[in-house]
Image 1 (cartoon, rainbow, N blue to C red):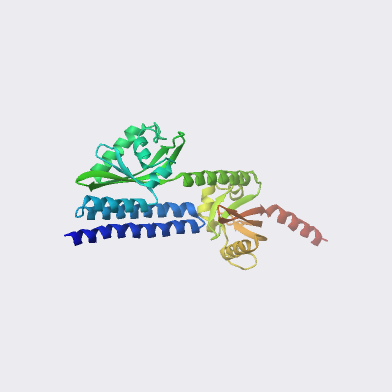
Image 2 (image 1 turned 120 degrees about the vertical axis):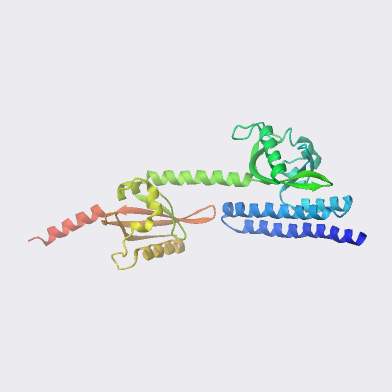
Length: 333
C-alpha cells in the first residue's frame, strides 16, 4: 500500500514537472513570434487547458494518496502554472492560491491574497455596470452546476487601478468536498497592446483619409487590410468594404505590358518588401469594364513587428486624356 501511494505521489510530482516544461515552452514560443497578440490568445487557451489538466490529474490521484502527499503534489502543480491559481470552497471563500496570485497584485504573500481577494482586489462594478459581487456569484453557481465556466473579468490593484483577466473555473473534489479551481490569466499587456494598436490604426486611417489619392494597406501576402474613402469616388461604389472583399474583381485579366494583373501586383509587393518601396504604372478596372490607369507608389512600414505595404494610387485618366489630345494636335496638318 505504501509503495502504491509513493508511486501515485510521484505521478503527481511528474505531472507538475511536465506541466512546467510544457508551459515554459509555450511562453518561449509566444516571446519568439512577432505577431504576439493573435498567438497569445491561442496559446493562452492552451495554457489554461494544460493547467486544468495538470491539476485534474493531481485531483484524480489524490483520492488514493494521503493528505500530506496530495498537498505536496498539489502545491508543486499549482506553483508550476504561470497563471494565478486559487481554490474556492462551496461558500465561495478563497482557501488556497499559488505565488503567482500574490505577484499579480504585488502583494506581500499568498495569505494577503486570500484575505483581501473579495474586499480590496475586485472593483465594485464590472465594465458592463453589473455589481461584481452579483456577477461573481452567478459564475460560481454556474461552475458548480455545470463543472466549468470561462469569462472575462476585471480585478483591481490595491491602488484601485482596474485591469482585465481571463478566468477559467473548474469544479473538483478536494479532501471529499467540492471546490472550484480558478485559473486567471493577466490580460494587462494584451489590453495595452490592443489600445496601442488601435491608436496606431486610427492615426494611419486619419492619414489615409486625408490623402486625395487612393490609399490601400496590404499585408505581405497581398491581402487588402484597409483602404481610404477615395476608393468610393474612383470606382463609384457605396462601401469601401466592397473593394476590400472583391479586390480581384477590380483588376483586368492582363496589364498593358501583357503580364497577368494579380501576378504583377504580387511582383510589386515583393519588390517593396525587398527594397522598401517602388513606383510603377498599373491599370484597374471599373465594374462596367472601363480601365483606370494609375501610378502606384508603394512604401514598406512596420507596425508592431509586422510588415505592411501602403500603396498610393494616382488616377491617370485625365493625364492620358490630355496626352492623347496633345498627340492629336501634333498629328493634325
